[in-house]
Length: 155
Image (cartoon, rainbow, N blue to C red; front, side, top):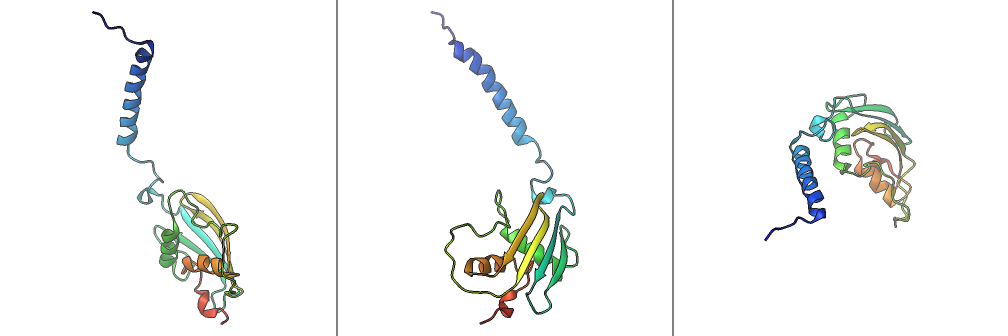
């Protein structure tokens, strides 16, 4: 008795072997630079922070460099750590409060900030304020990249 190979099997078998070889090559290759924090080139993470109406001498424009930490920011190491804490793979660390979010109606003061530059190879252009509970919480997650404005907020 002879076995005949189905026409689809004759085509699928070489594709299966090619796919297996490609998978082995893909998973055994070292990761490309920039995909892990250790592989990032120096100076790739650079942010410019402009703060207004925060009080307590915190207003001004500061530069922050990460890996290694540096710049004119009063606490560059803490600023880099704050951004790193908020970074999640595939998400924008600087994303605004989602539309339709339910936020407490509280006022955190007149402080505003703008953060521009590059983080993890992506451009950053984010604004911050303290107009309601969600905005206050978002600001506070980035302290000390942004100044601790809670102490300067009205009671």
